Length: 128
Image (cartoon, rainbow, N blue to C red; front, side, top):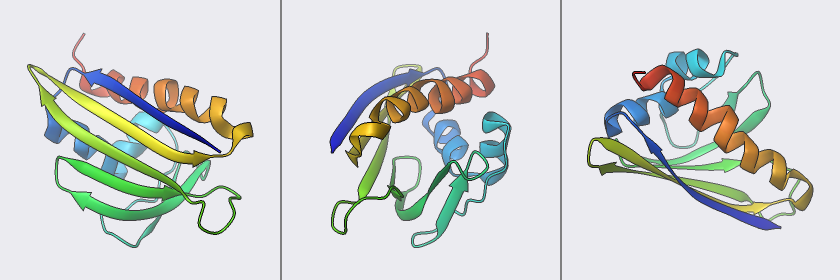
């Protein structure tokens, strides 16, 4: 099992970044795929037509999102994703920390955070 931690800078306010991560319509906009998402602890979610599946654990409005992403991990080895959103001058710092990623999924996950999620959110939030 591997862990992933990275900081991203997005030229948008924390509220916009948070909403891009929890609002089903905005998720579908940046992912260009079907999403099933409710900003409610205990609900299961699906992003990218079911390529990302999991359960929402905790929300701290405009500041933090905690989720469990489903892999075929042994019990007690859940992959927990903690996203922290910090204001950073005119930008927002997005801190992503994901634990217990299966070795064979690590490269796909780390590239997915950059290209599939963060870059896609930047495309709709950042003014060129």
